[in-house]
Structure formats: structure tokens, C-alpha cells
Image 1 (cartoon, rainbow, N blue to C red):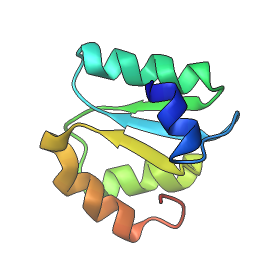
Image 2 (cartoon, rainbow, N blue to C red):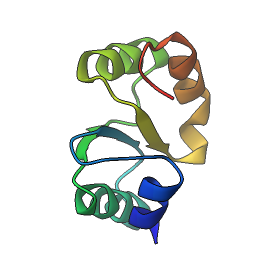
Image 3 (cartoon, rainbow, N blue to C red):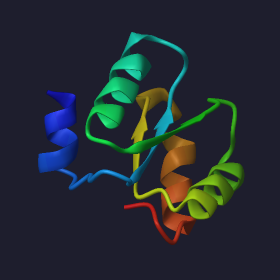
Length: 87
């Protein structure tokens, strides 16, 4: 289901880079499996990274979509505002 949503709702295509921002848990594994199933390149990040650090990673890797744990959304939202690539 998640792989289908990535393709149909967010337009993820093989080769797109997808950031996963979460602690190590089953949901993170499900996101990783879904992204790899559609052929995306997964970039995992540590939950402790701040917006400025995330923005550097996002822009360097040209990440277009991020899957983020809701507990970590504040930093991700700030990153998205500053990023040239993140949707």
C-alpha cells in the first residue's frame, strides 16, 4: 500500500531520492521497503539532526520527498522551507 501511495499520490519514480526521518522502528522499515520497491534511493537520517543539517543533506542529495515521523516534523518543516528540492 505504501509503495502504491508513493507512486500514485507523490509521483515517486525509480531513481528518485526519498528521505526517511524516523527512529529505528517497524514503520521506518516499512517506509524503506516501500521506497526500495518502487526503485527509489533511500536516504536515512538520524532523528537528532536539525533543520540546517537536514537542508544540507536534502539539497546535496537532491531529495524530492521525505517520509517523517510526526514527532520530528518541526525540523523537517523548517528544512522544507529552505530546500530547493524538497516538495
